[in-house]
Image 1: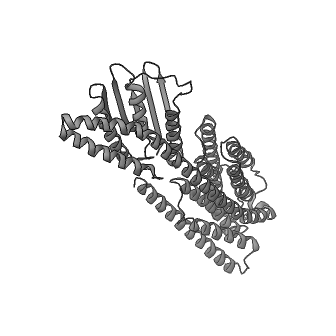
Image 2 (image 1 turned 90 degrees about the vertical axis):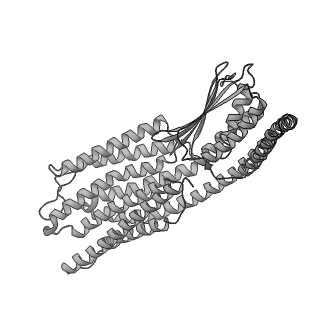
Image 3 (image 1 turned 180 degrees about the vertical axis):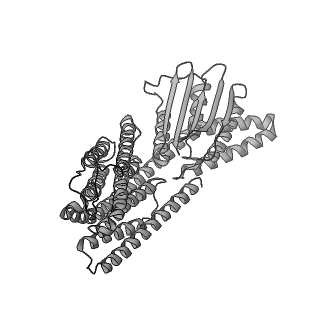
Length: 464
């Protein structure tokens, strides 16, 4: 439910990108036919290859339109394809007009645009690749270096309009041999190295690393070769275009195959984890079941109305617990908090003068794995508050930052030494189980801070 706006925006972006690619492809075809007719010349093999590249990239983007992907991930992949398409488009037009003196001004404009898109090519590829990498010092450093390099590249492209340092278009409509493009060669090599380093040192599987290396080297390297050298050496340009045409579909096939394999692996892992969740719940239920029934039995003699409320609340808790255990998709934080409140209310019947609960809900428009907050609250009560003589307070807080949603469950109970192994096997299973589901289902993390005698704080962080 919470993901629908994001998916709608992703679909809208994909539709816009696909529309741009279609228009540019049709324009390139029309331009090729018009120029060929005006010059009374036939369409060259290189022009056919370029047009085919544009059509193929448009087709690939269209085929991905109905493919369900992680929110954000497919958008960046489409952005990368759009960038490759635009780079190929600009230099396709340059190739069509190349050597025609009347079009020297247009050749300069299209070449400048082509160089700009070749610079952003690395940035869009990194944005896509970064979705699968952990945010470490290395990835953040690479983000800064790539962004800085692309800005420098863009500045060089703009400066080239006033003083040629990348290329020079002569009055005959050809590239001048007096300007050699060392800037692009150095930056291209540097940026390719950064992308390879990020893939090599990531924690991805070997198949995913190979997939990224193929995506980096195959279309990017040879496209960059064809873009930077373009018509100065037609043989290399044709070689680059043909290589991009052949290698790109191979990379996409490998990407899709690997993606399906990983989806199967994730699905099997989720099924296995779901079994662990069911086992964990079956281990936890008897303890809570006996205590809650004992409280309800005692209330039947003291306060029959409250006993009826407790019985209904207990039935709701069990029904939600069993229902949530079978859910493989995230649920609204509001649903999870309602479940927590039911559990807490039952526990307060057992410890009326010992347990205090404070809620600070600043944000409730995001999703969490089912049974991710409730076990943390249960641990806070069972292993923190209930082990103290005078009891204490459990605080449940949600808030958001520019990039994350956060859930904080803290208590002022006994605390423990997080550096030591937790002796309670079930508690350890519950924490590790929740941490794994938060990471796999919503791409988040679970962190624990605790000190003996000062309480425990559990923070669940979910990226937007």
